[in-house]
Image (tube, rainbow, N blue to C red; front, side, top):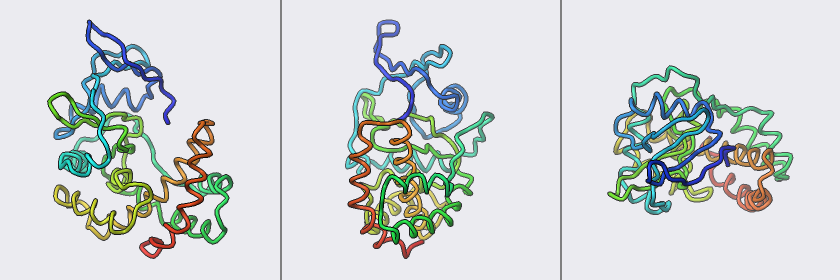
Length: 250
């Protein structure tokens, strides 16, 4: 959903990823941060030309199910969240404003009782952004892949910043998810990190899933993406029942 242009081209006779219009956050991540984040696999930076990155091609896509069954998914995210490295450049500032919330709700056209629940979660959602952990900010399945040797790699770092680990766990939950699915993801993650308790992660995970409704809706509509209406209709069908099942956690 980003604004950059991505394609495959040859560099010194080998295929690589050419990412044009890469954000300053992502350029600085590959140039300055990636080398300091041990236990986290990211594409090798091959060359930089202005706002264009030339990156190692990660040839094999993975499914959400494969991510769930790969212990490295959770180990690598935990290594990122527990890293002591402090970026010396401006990272993505994550937040959740009432203005953004109302903008998304105006096009989602959900029942007013549902809107009020979302606004309540937004009011307490500041907890997500008060954590001092480094996060990917965009760990959905489309941003993972494997090398020929099977190593799992996380790419697309334009949302690199600070926040709750739950922000990186939320995209690993299929669709909106159930409390049981959240608990399963948290259990896998807690094998590798003790930064937050399971109860706090569960609360944050509900918040993060709700925040993503707002983020995705606004990204799609502001950038006039062709799939916007499909997403909006899906949210209209799914969000009311989902909120009914999880709102008590927040």
